[in-house]
Length: 186
Image (tube, rainbow, N blue to C red):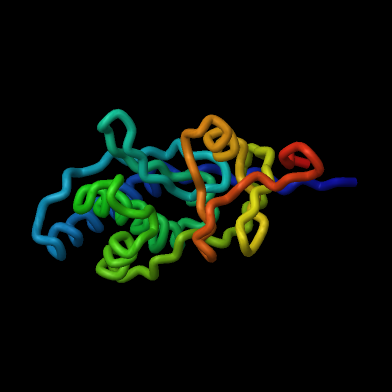
C-alpha cells in the first residue's frame, strides 16, 4: 500500500509577519552599508512548487514572493537564508540595474556577504509534504553535461526569447538530439 506524506500547512500569519519584519531589517542593514535608502518592498506568500523565494520585477513593480509551504517546513533556515537571498536580488537591481548584472553574479554575492550570509544559489530541501506541480523536463546539452530544463525555459528557447548557459563551462545549452527530433520529457 502506497502511503502518502501528509501535506504541510502553510506558515501562520504570525510567521508571515516575522518574514516581513526580517525583510525590513535587511533593507535597513543595506541602507546603512550602502549609504542610501531602499523603498520598502511588497512581500507575498503565493509562490508554489520547488522554489523557496523569488524576486520579481514586472511592469515596473517590484516584490518578493515566498513559498509558504517550504517556509513552514524550514522556517528558521528560510529566515536566515532565503529572505536575505531575495532581498539581495532587490538591492542589486536597485544599485546596478537588473539588466546590467547576472542574477547570482559578483554584485549579488557581495551584497550577500555584506548581509553576513553565504551566497548560496539554491537550498537543498526535502520537499516531501510540499504541494508541487510536476513539470515536464527537456534534455539540453553543453560541452560538459546534460541539463534538464523546465517546460517554461524550453518554450522560451523555442520561441527565441531566451538563451541559457551552463554555469560550469559557460557554453550555450542546446536541445539534446535523439535521432532526428529534440528530446522530449519522459
